[in-house]
Every structure is written in structure tokens, then in C-alpha cells.
Image (cartoon, rainbow, N blue to C red; front, side, top):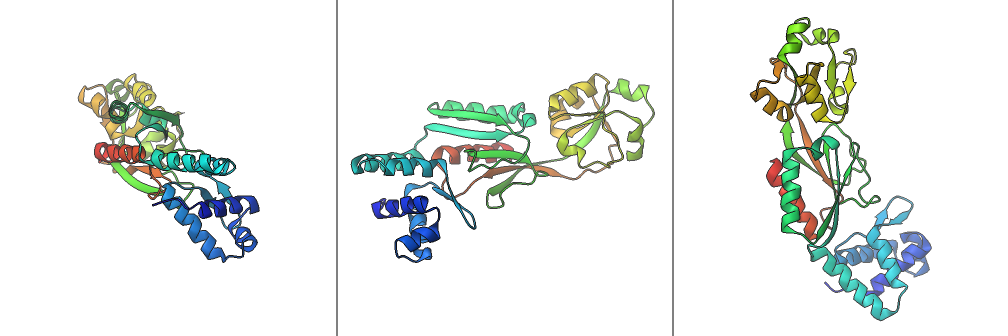
Length: 286
């Protein structure tokens, strides 16, 4: 689909006048027509230009780039529009991920990033540690992964469930031999409990937590060293259980199932480099 310079001009008018309604009035057009033509411009470029709210508009990174281009001579603008369109179809540039620290150290995540980097060496990867939902559009992130217990800041974002899991209580045999027997959840009040911020919300508030950390490796290590009972995902404690470094506590107690949520701003404006990364997550985590 070719890019209409008239629609580009209408986009500029929208930015200059501070909104779609104001741009429509200034150009003698209906608001719905301006909105539709802006949507067609975004579709033809393959990227979102404006963040629309009830009363205001805000430029995305692509929108700011287009506004900058629109101030240049027409030949430069045409060249820039072509580059913007091609950028969406290339496996180059940069992808930015927001990931909890616990996932950063997981074997599955390392495999995904390694495979992606090997397949697409021209793509620069930026990974930041974020434990809470971020504003993907305003902070220029392509993807975020979060546990399902975390509320996503924008309900319009695409949310895809991955990797269902449960958490459980584990401790070293030496710790269990040393301290009072545990037969019920209430008995945990007499023990040192180690967990992360997400799992802490699943527990009775009356159960004291000796250590809360986003580092699952630290929680597992402390449990293995006899420093308490860890409440962590089963997938994270499995190797230590198999090797006999940890044993399960309260095996018959069923904890709520959780999952990871893969989040991205829109299914409509996804560059190919991001689509490929999403598919890798789906393959590995399902």
C-alpha cells in the first residue's frame, strides 16, 4: 500500500493542532474522516504513529520520526517514508524486552535469546529487568513477560498466556530434621519462609515471610543451605529435588496455577523481527 502525502499532511495538522477534532475543524473535515485517514496512514506504514486518549494525542517513537521527516524537503520525506516501511519488514534494528529478573536467569529464556541472536545477528537486543507492567508504547518496549498475577497497565495490549506452572514449598532435609514438623499451612508460622513478591500474595498474610526476593536462584540456594523453606515455582526447584538437595513440604497442598503472560502493544504493527521473537517464546514456553 502506497503512502499518501495528503494523509501525512493531515497527520502533521493533527500534531500541530493538538488533536484529531481540532485538525478536522481546521481543515473543514469530519472528525471520523480524519481518524480514518490517520488509521490508513498507520496501516500503510505498518506502525503506530499516535497514542489516542479521550482528550489528547501523543506521538509514538515512529510518530515523532514522521513528524521530523515532514518538516524536511519533499524528496527527503519520500525517502524517509520508504525507509520506515522497509524497516518493518527487515530483520535488523533493535528489539527491547522487559523481563522479570527471575526469568532472566532461566535456561529456557537463555536458549531463546541465544537462538534469536544467532539467527538474526543484525538485530540489536536490549533486555531490561522490570518486575511490574510497563507502558510499552511510551517506553518503547516491543515485548514484556510477566507472571499472570501482575496487572497489565493497558488493557488494549495483546496478552498471550505461556508456560502454566505451580509453586510449592521446598526445604533441605537437614532443615526439616532440625525444626518442628510441618503438617499444615498453619505450621509454617513457626518457620522461616523464603519467597518472591508474586508468590507472597498467594499466602495467608498471617504467615510471616523471613525473606522476599525476586531472585529465585537465591531463594533456592538458601533453602538448599538450610536457611528456611522456599515457596518457589516447581520448574525452578526440580533439578535440586532430583539431586536430593531439596525435599517437598506439604506435598498434598494444592497451590493456585499460574502462568507467564507475553505482552505486546498491538498485533497490527508488529515488525517481522518482533513476530519471530514472539513465535520463539510460544514454541519454547508451550
